[in-house]
Length: 134
Image (cartoon, rainbow, N blue to C red; front, side, top):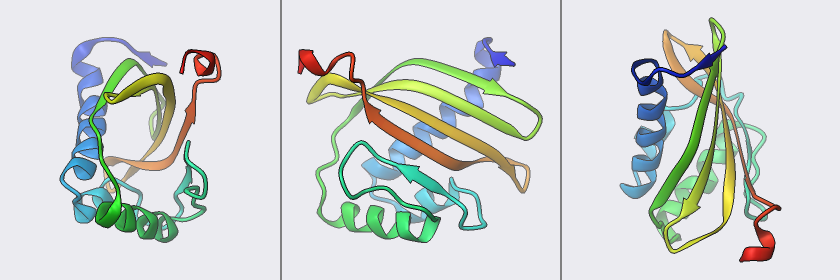
């Protein structure tokens, strides 16, 4: 079922804000707290050599990025949330403030873990419909 009222959307937008803040603050502990605890995270990125098939591999890449990467601010558009009792899916368009086109299509798959929504899977891909505009 799609969530459409602002009050019900708030926990999901908060999770997305916390995820972004973990990058802006380069806070690996906060980043870790947003993911499921069983290491079964799968991450598909819009940049080469950044995909991960488990949480540990993903955290290693993110920790390295926190040490050496440039972190720019994001603009979030068209957030949609779909939920069942124990899983949720968020879709959104993200845009780098420094280079808004092409946008980055983003999907979060969330699962309840110890009562809280946690990230099980994320997928980022540049929007091929906007590539000609870049």
